[in-house]
Length: 149
Image (cartoon, rainbow, N blue to C red; front, side, top):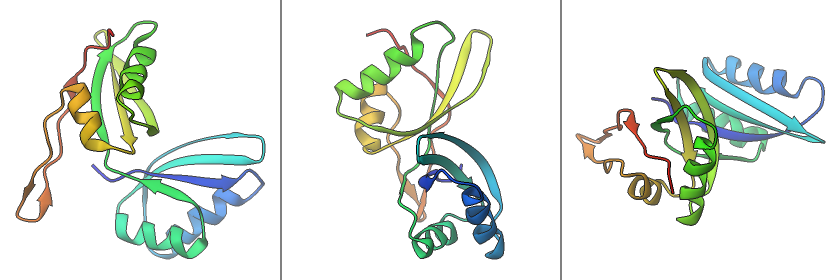
């Protein structure tokens, strides 16, 4: 899974197009994109086919961003599940920097999210530790998470 970048943009006409064109000019394909705005600011959560070049493009444009690996969990599809999940991370001192509900099926919802402290989030949610094999990080498969406090 690609690394997500959470990018801060000005909320004005053409700003997202400016970012998309800069990525396209460098041959970067956008794989996932979610965004929202409030007032004069917009936040976009972006995954591409090349993390290094995406980072270079964002830095060259002077756009503030945070980045991190994507964690994937499944939680019960019920009212309060997101509140329980995010409260657990908050109590552990973990800040969620980007989140996407990828879909719901069979009574479960898949959350894809990035955080400011991956290992603490993994420990809090009972996700396996990440290890490196031959210079490559081994990603974690979807893991169910009990969201009750």
